[in-house]
Length: 526
Ligand code: G4P
Image (tube, rainbow, N blue to C red; front, side):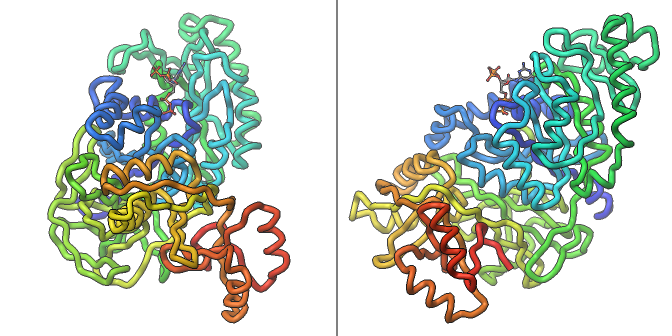
């Protein structure tokens, strides 16, 4: 298969949702219908299996959250589909945001009872920053939820995006009968709720009497009325608008009972983008360029505590990656080769000989990678758009065991390289402050420092609530500001100065009183 054919086969996306909306269930059903797994329950049982083999993952099990982000790849309809999983818990939101830098589109899951929730809005904001195309799956139609027309309005208003229903529910709650495909103008009616689709599906047209027989005349007429209304209100589905990130196609269904999932998967295959271009500090990189390039968006500690190595997740952006070939680690200006890069399949990892744009491969790493690192065939460029966001909780790391200060230093360094949290240094005394978006990360860090590095520490809360990266055109003005505010200045891992503010009000006052200083809420700025 040619390089271009390989490229056009790829679809790389993430499923995102407010916790409990049904992300895991939907992921599993997509894998099931895609033929990647044979039985329902595999995704969840995989989670549990991991957590029993590792102490770190025990935290995940206890808390019932998915701490790690992983990749699941399967082939369906001649496409190679890469699903990048994201942790649902809000304390790990930054991990999710970074994963979103490595996908070409997303499926956003909404609970039809709860509608748009807090985390849904934040995730959507991140998608909008990059104009990532979004498909919405309204889940749990088997529960008594909101009226679908009201839900569409809520989606438009709260998520600030135009919507276009693609499937439509026939009744809801305990009377939920399935979904009608508005574009294909037919309904796939399940004889029974089976997990395999081959034999138990019947296709029904809107006008046919069979519809009345299958769903009842009342529901059939209601559906006909709804469809007429939809066609009157919404314009034709515009694929270009979806690809530009302006229009979200909406699907209704119930992941748990399989309704609407097949329709979602098939339309996703029809409309979703092939790997798209990506920005670097020098130029735009197109996926069909001959030379390989890629970036690290995630670093995962080894699940097995006996092995210290880590796994760097590399998103391939252009060209063909080949096993054993030398590539340039741009930040370190170092040639590196990888003898056993691996691909993630739904239920196993395989060493790969080559990989193409859109693919995510795992590279064994002994500490050479940081989030955002770029690999190329020699060109000096660095992928951008993988910023750190201002943390909200700040704590100073206090060493509890003076004999282990080296281990602590190394552990803190490596864990923050992994992106578990952000590290800031303050003077005097080179004190280390860790910034996170959630309390849970401190528990994870403390636990991992002890278990993986043998270092014990405690955290002392610092009264800050925001960190802003500061710049100024006039370097002397910046130096003066840093001198005056020295008690509130820290440096991030790349030695960039950061202003730590205790309250939003203090931050606003400082912005107002120092017009020459620019305050940035993410680490990436022009
Ligand atoms: P998440 O990854 O987004 O956090 O959600 P997850 O899939 O784990 O689903 C959260 C809960 O919602 C689960 O119930 C799941 O079974 C349920 N769920 C998912 N899809 C549907 C649906 O279409 N309809 C209904 N009624 N429920 C759905 P749980 O009780 O937390 O776990 P479980 O023991 O049922 O697995």
